[in-house]
Image (tube, rainbow, N blue to C red; front, side, top):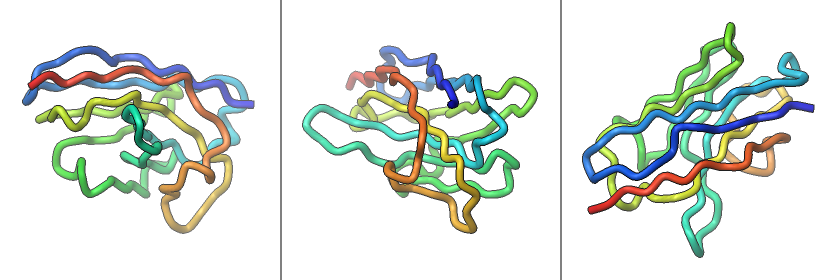
Amino acid sequence: QVQLVESGGGLVQAGGSLRLSCAASGRTFSKAFMGWFRQAPGKEREFVAAISWSGDKISYADSVKGRFTISGDNAKNTVYLQMNSLKPEDTAVYYCAADGSWRVVVPTTPRLFNWWGQGTQVTVSS
């Protein structure tokens, strides 16, 4: 089992920045990819970004490219999502997820991720 705890969400004005953190514990050696997803009210959970734990594979959703940066700190078993130039449409609950399977391509589908955090709310005001 892998336990994931997100932090760093909050309320920010459009154009502002936030950094989300996801601390992993438990069987941390079993995770191959870490990802961030988000879900707005009435919408499906959508992919935001993912990174291999080795750091050599990264993928972003088109909607956040150039504004968000995913990174990892192996020593702290923590993954970060730096979010800049935030827009009201970025408002959602953001979830951290871990995928225990090694893959050639970065996973972007929620069903491929085995473990999930509880989520952290990000609200961007206009």
